[in-house]
Image (tube, rainbow over all chains, first blue to last red; front, top):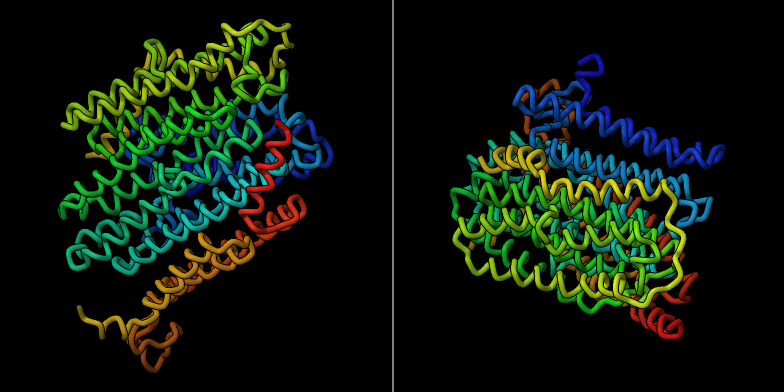
Length: 496
Length: 127
């Protein structure tokens, strides 16, 4: 338990927490250093995630870690296998791009006094999300959920505008209700098993579940409601559009691109570990699958229909996130290996596309003030590069060949056929049509609308991260083998 | 159904009632402060449930008595967990109170329907 290599799993989180609390001090003396330092810290934690990935890939075994040297079942355990490594790489990598974007952007988004605290919250949120992903302990999972819940609300209201304060309050109330449900369910699991460590609780629950079928149902439904609120699964999504649309652009990018998916991942990992055996043996799995699929279909159709009538671009993107969360739950709900691979791939691809969309919308709003769909007239000529990134990501959302969005749709489609739910293919097709219907007006206006005078393109420091996100969206569209291989290995762990 | 078991374990029933009351208050009452109080009631319900899981019939406090080393002791772990839970709940409450003060400063009211109306009116005026 000495040396850096042994403590690798916790080092990125500790680094992020330390730099989070250093930020206000740095902002007091050198306000311009905050953004580059935060980017650097996140870059280091990405390297940590890469090192973890290398270790897991080389040994083929999950990395187990006991915090403070206290072994489970007494201490807090961390466990990082393929699914966790995949999520850590996505979280850290996308955050590096978003933070690099803020280097030039943050002074336009926030008053100077708030900048240091903004990075505190941002890094706390990333650390908490990494914690949720790695936690192999039920209560530790809850604590990290609360940290990330509060940090996410604070990111929404960082600007302090009229809309964002109300949106953050709404988000805070609903997020607190969601984690209340989750904690209640964790309490019931503890009551049944007497264990908080995921592995021990799973082993214990496998022995005793048949005596408490009703309690098990309450646990499962509380988990679905709690994590559903947090990940904005359709009927529980009411907080998302306000919060994501009124937040500053970098906040929208991380909230829409990453935060909601971490909860979806946490739910599925609970279903695949603690609750795996009772679900499989009691026949509840069919019913849970039906609930998740029904909610996913509602999310895909409902989110797209709401997006169709939005006139504000950021609100449109926010409702599009509601729909895309449906894709992820569709994959997790089907529960076959291909479907889970597709869902994990969509976590990555949607994170790239949606943060690219929000960041380019932010750059466009910064230079031209355009926030509504009508304001995008001639934008393709006014800001060719920013609008180019927006176009690439929007086309990928629609699922055109050559963009990564198609890859997940393809895998989801084949998983749907293999699982024997052909009607769900109609949902996939309808959603593609709806995506086209709400993204094309924006693109049409941008490239066909009356030409206006050319605006100044966003500064290079903002353009580079956006171009990287857009470039990766195309790159993975042509060569998806690397993320596909990792997601496939992760799905094999989740669905043995 | 065996109702006597429910009576013997009444803390669980009470915690569920508190949980439900709290959620109803958060969702239905038209005042942000009352909503926040409802949130706290809901969290108290959860905490009561978890603390109750640590109790056993006829258990003594978990301090080992040398005279009776094999006695029945209550489980101290849920109590320790709930300390963390209370800290979390206090910080959520503090943050929400701060936001409510800010909302009152900006809109002059803490009634959500009035806030939405004020917001719509302002947006209509802007357009």
